[in-house]
Length: 143
Image 1 (cartoon, rainbow, N blue to C red):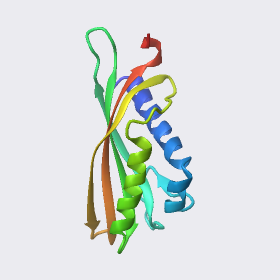
Image 2: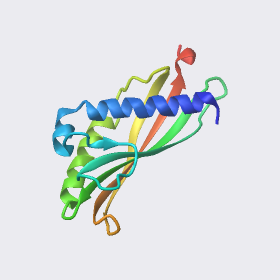
Image 3: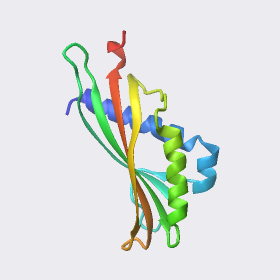
Image 4: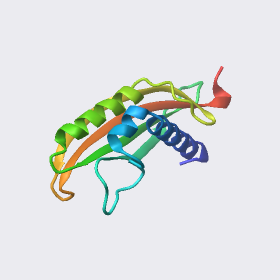
């Protein structure tokens, strides 16, 4: 992976974090410090985790670009199935087709691809696993 790919993925994650953490309704649902980029050992529920981004070349014959598959998880405690679904719905409303500003890159599009909600027996709670797909272009290539 080139530095440009890493940079676009990092810029995307930073913009998503900013959009999610800046929303008062989502912050009220999660509580203070409710957005993370790792699994927590002893978490306060609910919380949201930016679970990862997989990037690949999406260039055309004339324009460079990248496609990014982003995973976001909403985790809740026991009895939290409805709660994680409500939080996931808010995340989808904030990110699906959002016009986020990325440092050094242009976000061509950001689409919600799907959400799977299930009980996580190991963590003794519920999880909504969300998938988003984004396409980016480097800023110097925008015409």
